[in-house]
Image (cartoon, rainbow, N blue to C red; front, top):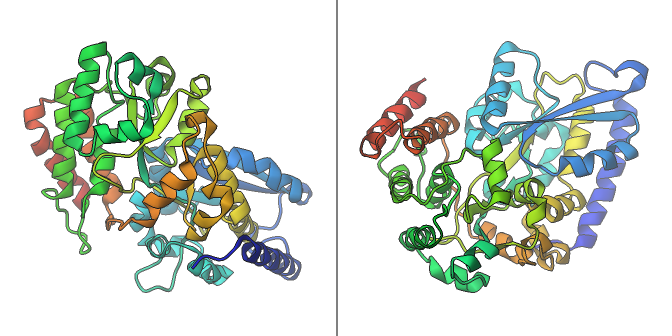
Length: 426
């Protein structure tokens, strides 16, 4: 079912020859020419850790005429900035990352992006998880605005030292057995907080998102109609229960206090899509060996997973596509998985020994090469809707108000519905 590494390598070699021939025939760029001295600068906008720091120098060494500028920003802000630049008609990066939660929004503006099918990307369709490929494909199937990087199969990360101090088991199988359901997870959290006086989880929003990702449907149905009473209500109710139980540190993701919490022990457990591993490793290097990975309550699910696009505003479309294509090749995807944890979107790699045999020393040698591929292969992703991103942000803001005690829990759901309806119609 999956091609061997040899076949992958052969495909890469053929692709490299093809790229060389295209470059020779088409000149340095589709538009805009080169920068001063023949140097081409490619800007990449993203958030979190895509493993690009590790790959940048490698690509520049092999392509001395290319300089890569990495612009990492806050998750929501990067998507908002991209939207503004598309409306303005200028200023977008040469390569812009888009999360799955915002993909339908941008996919509906496909005329603002380079159609990667015109660059030969159709040859990659069979390499991807079918649903991942379709997520960035226009409704008529004629425009592919992106190539996927990773998927966000879910697990649960926990601090073994903090669990031991609370008298909880630390072996991953035993920990997994503690919480087959979210109700059981909340009880473990209450027990931990009662015994230690410390908080169990990092934030309400990082409970809401994984629970929502496990539901049959999210914020929208396939007719793009808001449906808050289904999956969103289930996730919201559990989140409010956790906040009322006092087990959350009430931190804001990717902010200073949250990052500091990974080291200080402000929380003992958090939902871990594969991409979270890299952030923990980078943010809290002194905690190596103190983390492990268990099953997430309620089974699998997906939270996140990203894509790389080329806005039409780029003055270096050919060079941008060459870099994008290089980034999604098996060698780079495996390297990123090993370094930062991001799980590739290409299932053939799940059978590669470089992944299947990989254990992560930072996370107590957890067999991540088996844990996360298993999650990804069993996924049936939700339809996320054109306004999914703004709607999620609006509901998260309501959860934030409950966390900082500016909104009573009893009134929170009505406020969340109101905020979601506003986001859906704006």
